Length: 84
Image (cartoon, rainbow, N blue to C red):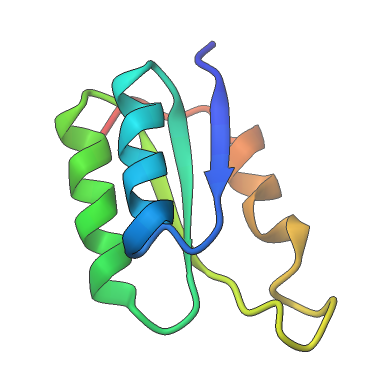
């Protein structure tokens, strides 16, 4: 099983570069964004180009816990999948 990292705000900037670096170093990624879904999809493509798996989820933590909390990736983490 590959190590997994969840990188918040990985739709641009430092978050996006961190996600790419982790993928290049063997991590599968949980990719989050608040408003820039296209940027998150760009990150996903880079993760896949590195031969790793990725999942994209919208995550807005400005108002504290809610439907977009840590459970966002729980089902994805438990579900075995073939590499995409």
